[in-house]
Length: 472
Image (cartoon, rainbow, N blue to C red; front, side, top):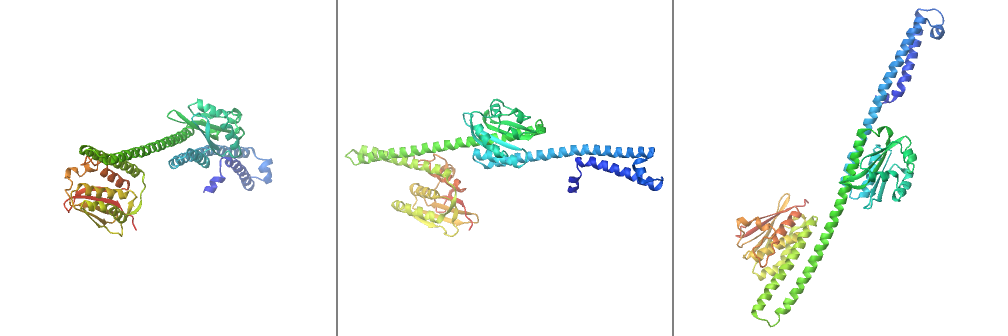
């Protein structure tokens, strides 16, 4: 069926109707020869055709040729419409492919290169090229598809001070520029001899009043004034412009984050050093022969300095938690290591720490900072619970591992079980920073984990931690 449609086209239907007219003439002559007339066949066919037969054959032949002409015109229009629909479908596919590409790339040079390849590959345009401008409106990047040997000449020209006229016009013109015959109107362009019988679209890549560059495409001349064609090209340019704007904004955001991180790092380092210097002088002063009242002031100053260093460390951990990526970690190993570091301090406070956590199946989504979660909870219990026993346990469930840190101390009032995780909350204004449990919650959230404060069966507070398990 498809093969027949290829054979019978608007170009073949008229000759075919003429052939059918000749066959009709020949058939009529043959019938007359065999049934009605005497004489030779060739006389009836050509030399001696009776007037009424000549009239009948001429009418039949004319009608067939006229009918063929009418069908040919209809088929020609249909073929034009089919080509136009096919072309518009290709352009719409290009539009979709460009939008998908914009979500995947993270560099402007890669973006314009892939955009040109997509638009040329889908056969929407004879050739496409894109130039990007720097802050001084000079060309900084260039990409093309379909220019072949002309690429180097055009690239050299657009980087020079003698850019093609279309580049100059784009900088001055806000709208779409359509050039009907670039081979005559753009004689200064190295591509002019490629545009015989073709037209060209040129449009600035603008977003929010800023021009990022231009896009140029070579198209069949008959589509220059087609509204749908122009609309799709403008939409393509708008999408690429928005993509370039997003990349620019992302680049600015990254620079701001880098600058902010640098300033935070310098501030933390400088402030920590200065506090340590203050601690050194306070220690020297403490060893001098001073009054009891002065010693008390020195003691309070030392506590304030320690609190300042602790605060700096907590801020650093909170910032690292926001950037840390998850990785498989063994909760049992982390708990064992944390307890071994804190055990001596706990013994000084007459606090016993016990562990009841399975080794098997304790692989979870976490990271190195997960240790800070257990360290903060255990230290809080030693400092503030007023109890003598701390129990750390773990239970492996299907998709999560539930870890608990609980004690036999004074517990947490029901109305405080949620507020204790808020930034700045503390029950010890002298020693606390108000960031300990806030840090714990932030760290767990960065690992897609959760924490909840409850009452312990031992009589004190119970912190229940949920972490996503790594399926073995």
